[in-house]
Amino acid sequence: MDKLVIRGGNRLHGVVTVDGAKNAILPALSATLLTDQTCVLRGVPKLQDVYTMVEVLANLGCSVRSDNCSLTIDAGAVKHYQAPYELVRQMRASFLVAGPLLARFGRASMALPGGCAIGPRPIDLHLKGFFAMGARVSLDNGRIELTANSLRGATVYLDFPSVGATENLMMAASLAKGITYIENAAEEPEVVDLANMINSMGGRVSGAGTKTIRIEGVESLKGTTHEVIPDRAEAATFMIAAAVTGGDVVLKNVIPDHLKAVSAKLREAGVSVEEDGSLIHVRGDKILKAVDVKTMPYPGFPTDLQAPMMSLLAVCEGTSLVTETVFENRFSHVDELKRMGASIKVEDRSALIKGVTQLTGAAVKAADLRAGAALVIAGLVASGVTQVTGVHHINRGYGDLASKLRALGADIQGEASP
Image (cartoon, rainbow, N blue to C red; front, top):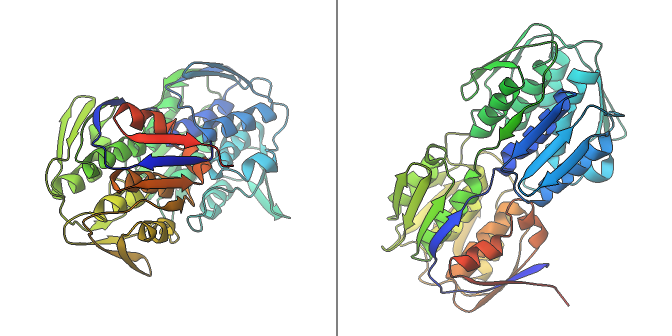
């Protein structure tokens, strides 16, 4: 399947269960390298990025067994510390194996990572932290070599609250000698989830979810069983899709506190959002009103949901302003939405959206993961037929999105190109 064909106009209704979080399972998989004992991860989403990370672990010498939505990983027989270029180039999160390898074995060798083209995401903050902890860092021919006789605790201030750097340094520090402080740390729920996993392995991490994380290194970590948190980006995507189609959808397996920023903006736009334990009920039965959105690190509005939210704003009554502060190239979806009739003007890192009464189906292409989700949402509310190509991007972060939308009443099919 390399394109999605959507016939818009159907109102979404029903119940959908949210998968485990992509951005929690990837660091959790990396963390299994911290121990020579077996780890079991539950609630694993069936995503291309997960398959890629599993290949990275297997290539390093890990034994990986799959059972439905669980993975059993044994890193006791890791043979080498060099992650293959052909895998690392596919996904930036693959660099998260560097911290665990360096901490446990004193060595890691990595190609510069790839991923979605949404703007520069340098790994200098990771390297700065490793260096502060006593690692030797060299870069030659696009490859990073990290070595350390023994990592030691340090105080690392992050110039930007990078999620990846926070997670990588937290894993490395868990086996370092002494105490490490990560200041201006990322506060995302996925960071907290990783800290909880490390602590279940015998680690000593405190302060996760705040600006300062304290890690007291231990000599070794043990195996564990860990269930990853629900995917807040997937949940919010369904919330927005329900709202824009005038739908009535209940989401199961969610943590409402993780979605506060999104829920607040949807309510401001006139959408009914009700929370009940691990459920969220979304009803979009009123006229949607324009709202302004500014992406920020957590607990602000997530950059991952800027594109899907713009599809909703494209049909809101009035004019909205979207400001992207996290990634500079995250407006790839704008020209595609304009092909569908959206009225959007971009200047620097801001987009001015004048709501239109109707989008029209068109042939569009997803340039990255969340842009793909935005185009699917636009197709759900557009008149006529929308064809979305670049589906491989969508598959990196959504487990069979088309099937879940069909179960809610959408007319969406996957097709192979001729």
